[in-house]
Length: 238
Image 1: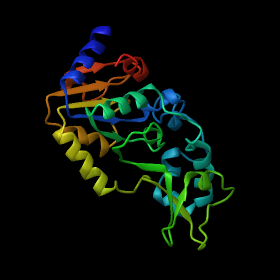
Image 2: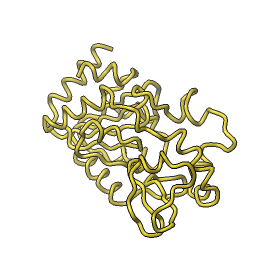
Image 3: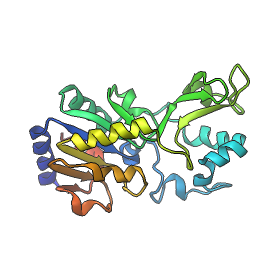
């Protein structure tokens, strides 16, 4: 393992256009549960499956039950960035890391002061009235007792991509361009099974692809370097 981490350090030192593409595993060491592991959100018991609750149809038809779940399970305000978030900021300040592409909606990259963060699935930090589009912060939504309403009477919706909703085209296009122009792509903390986000890796044309994940991914055979280890263990050495 030490040899692999040393190899990653060398690749970072040799690269000047690094892109980091991360999933739920980036935030688990901050205490935020992931979705698909044996202890993850999708393997817990609820009245409805989480995939159903976190869908556009359920939000529209069962808004109160959506928010009961959302306030309990999606509130990341009391969590802090971990070593991975902070090390990425250091690489960004060194002008090596050009973009962070994340599947997470917790806002921890911004809390760590990362500048160029592309949020594929949106963020809990942004919320908008569906009627007048007035902005509301996460505190307003998570501190609400019932369905959060705007001053105009409209229902407030989190700016997160629910099931049945499309990704933001502008964010997707920026992510594709960043990956296509990178000389080093580090993919970490993601199973690479959720489409279309997982398909972004196919746009990489650079020299070195690194995959860091505790478990096997479908793209391991395409990588120059695969590290099956916790992200904190890897990034504390970077």
